[in-house]
Amino acid sequence: MKQQPVLLGIDAGTSGVKVCAFTPDGALIQKEQSCISIVSDKPGYAEIDVLHYWTLIQDCVKRITTNPAITVIGIGLSTTCPTIVMMDSDYNPLGKGITYLDNRAANEAQEYASSFASAEAYENLVGNRCSVSTCSASTMMWIRNHEIERWRKTSHIGMLNSFIAAKLTGNSAIDTTQASYSGIFRLANPEDWDDDLLHVAGIPRGKLLDVVQPSTCIGGVTRLMADTLHVVPGTPVAIGSGDTAAAAFAIGFTDSHQAFESAGTSGVLTFVLDKPKFNPLFMNRCHVIPGLWVSHGANSMMGGAIDWLRKNVLTEFHDYSILDEEVTHAKPGAHGVVFLPYLAGERCPVWNPHAKAVWYGMTLETSRLDLLESVFEAGAFSLRQIRDIGEQHLGISIDSIIAVGNGTKSTRWCQMKADVLQVNYATTSFADASAYGAALMGGIAAGLFSSPLDPSIPFLKPDGKTYQPTLSPGYESYMQGYNIYKAL
Image 1: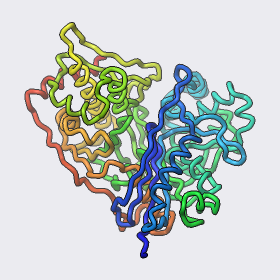
Image 2: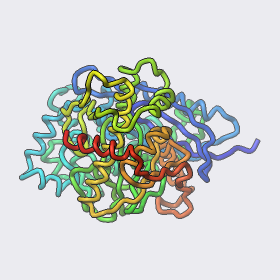
Image 3: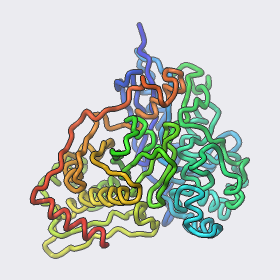
Image 4: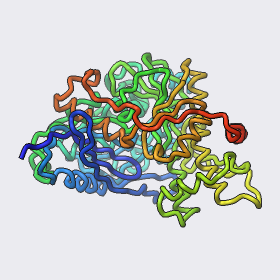
């Protein structure tokens, strides 16, 4: 039997893992996925059990590789970012992985920032503001200060993809898109850790993995792991990137007049930059494509707020599709109810790990449908606020948005975003762009493509529905809600 060569994209997010198999020309052959929950044992903690995660990844891979009609020729990784994993000398995890939603290191972030002449001085040097989610060094400092034995045993500090790569190949590294959020790496000169910053943070270089480009082949799958996963020993593995960076790569994102939205647990609106000119209101990082940078306006819980609502308030809606159908019956403006989705603090533009969620404008007449509508509208309002700030501070003009992710499955939400932002809102028929971007990086590692700039790479194109903005009577209600949202 002639076997179909495939590229595997492993996408490890905050809510679960997806493993997708693609042909070299981009056709999806098979997708497997499993869910995982964030562990929050203490206030401000948000961790994942990385060993359980690894078990789920193996299970998903094996459900694909047991198909005798395919052969895996390359593997790439995409992971939630940053998620720090402390490892011993054999790459075994020391405790749980600490996700970007974890706020325990807020004091360390403030301590680190105070070591510089001013916040502006730090931002100009590093390329990002000093917050826990954009300065993972603060979490390293917290472990050093509060978990001395764990710190002593740590030989390798890596990210989630570092851990997965080590399990697959026995080798590891940190890619530039994740190093960008460390606070000990200079975005304007993205080659290596910065020794001066390491000194200020008190982080020994010897504990840190090397920094490499996302499409770098970190090694081949070991014989032992190849036997477990039913792949050929030595199959090339790309270290990969953060999930939003992988999704941006999947669509070949290079147009400064276009924004890119990743609609998942977080809502992230991304702009591309051809010069290292950054604004600290955004999360700035290296692009997978060399010589470019991307600026993310990231809220923490846009999609997560809908999931929270379903699990804790509208508990009778066990399936998201039912919830999505229900919101089509709601009225724009939610009868004056406005929701701030700060369930895990907030990133852009508030940048406050202690920010709290709020329902504003509730009365005795407020219905459950109003609450549902207000949570959907909060996602659109957040994107509008991020877009407006981007145009004001980055000198760009956005006339269209390409969107990927599970949030694009909601017709009502997509139209709402087009109306609130007054832009064309185009979706792709394939929602799992991060997995596809990871697979493409696996193709580069395997030599199928020469580099991230190879013109033969089959990038995703908008081939779903394009939502045109309207100025329906609902637009005025949206704008009234948006103005309240900004004021709150």
